[in-house]
Every structure is written in structure tokens, then in C-alpha cells.
Length: 241
Image (cartoon, rainbow, N blue to C red; front, side, top):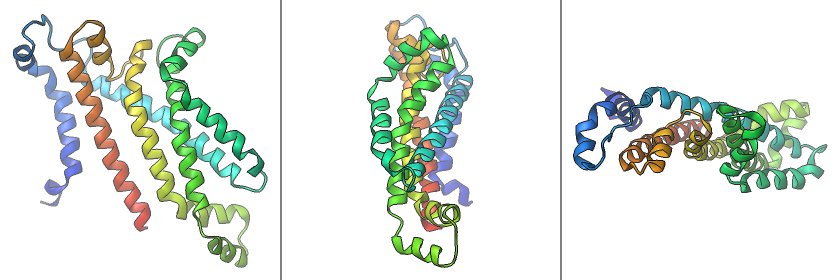
């Protein structure tokens, strides 16, 4: 069957299988780390942690897409061109702050949990999306805009029917980079009480439990690989479309 030859489906299957079967691999980790009394992370279900991790990344990335694309579109319009340098500087400055520092500032204001993590991931994910939007729209041939104006399209119609479709592949590349960065960065959200796949990593590091670190890190890495392959498919679809 055709689906059995699809590497992406196999990656997804392996990821799901690990989420379900990893708790049953305690004998394996016990043999690798005989000095550990508890070689298997059991504080939370790996499936629940994965769903919480995906939700955190999805929500923060959605806000980043809305703001990043909106800002990118705004500064490419005649009314917003003078603000381009300012917006690029502000967004770039947001990514220079380490996520840990953002969490440390946000926690006293917003408390522990998902909210400060969403703020940190949002700020960290803006720059690639803004850059992708600017590069994509900037690469649209001037002749395409001139033809659209010649047939009587309004500025909004040119943006929606000409510029965005032609820039879609580059914009998706920026979103892809942003989301992959945030999948890895979201792991540190567990330091402020958010449930993520980083929880085993953080607890493992604080308790000198290498087994926990390996379990969490493998799942985060595999989630990033699966997501990257999904975005690769989406990019090709826009490129070929």
C-alpha cells in the first residue's frame, strides 16, 4: 500500500508508539542506569505531556503568526513603510532576550503556568515570521502588481489575490522556522510550572537522573522532526501550487 512507503507516516507512528510504549520500557532503562532507583519518569503521562506541549506551541505560534504577518504586511504598505526599521528592531530585540529571562519577568506578574510561557514563546517566535513575510512579499515581481492594477484590482485585492499567494511558500518557511524553534524552547516552560515534554528533562537535570533527560529529550526531538516534515509538505504544496 502507498501509505506504507511514506516516511512521514512512519515518523508519526514511531512518535505515537513511543508516547504509548515508553512507560513500559522501565527494564531497559533500569539496565542502562542500574544506579537509579527510579529510571522511568512516571509523574505524568507522556501522552498528556505531548498534548500540553503541542497546545502551548500552537497557541503561542498562532499569536506570533497573526502579529508577525500583520506587522510584515503593514510595513510593506505605503502607509507603513516609515515604520519598517522600527518594527524590525523591536521584533529582533524581543528575540535577543533569553526565554528564561522573559519567564523570570513574567512570572511575578502573571503567576506560574502556561501564560508566562506563551508570552516567552510568542516573543521568541516573531522574528522568523516577520522576516519570512517581508522576504516573501518583497520577492513578488513588480510586473505582477502592475498587471493586477491594470485589470482594476484594489490594493486589498492585490494583497489577497496576488502578493500573498505568490509569497506563501516563503512565509510558510518563516513560520516553519518559528514553530520548530518554539518546540525546543517550550521545554523550558516546565521551569515555571507548565506541563510539557520538558518536564522529564527539567526534573532529570535537577535530580541528576539521566534517564529522565533522555526520555524527554527524545520525545521533544522527534516531535520537532515530525513537525518539520509536515511543514516541508505544506511548503511544497504552496510552491507547486
